[in-house]
Length: 90
View 1 (spheres, rainbow, N blue to C red):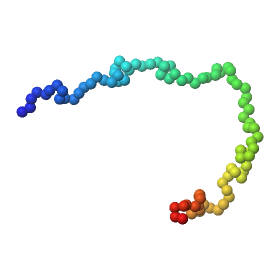
View 2 (cartoon, rainbow, N blue to C red):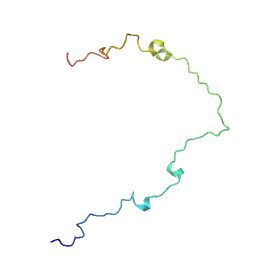
View 3 (spheres, helix red, strand yellow):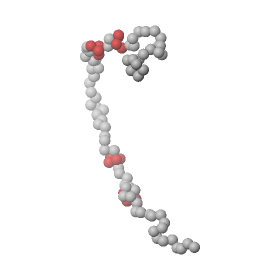
View 4 (tube, one colour):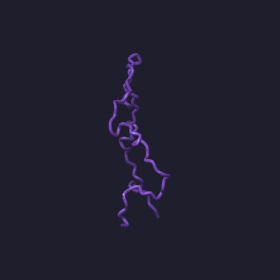
């Protein structure tokens, strides 16, 4: 025979967490939700022509054709070593 359920025997219902409470859900205006604004220049204040030429580079940055391409060679050999010899089986 089962008796009447005791008040503490059922699932416990606690108060909702504060971040989920209905009073905490407030819709903010778009300016507050996204405070980061990208600066936009006015259309009348267009900048002059921009010089896109690069200064003369030296050394590795000079664009040496021998450094820009892969080294010349035959077709790819799958057994060709790609690094130092392994020390595992030495």
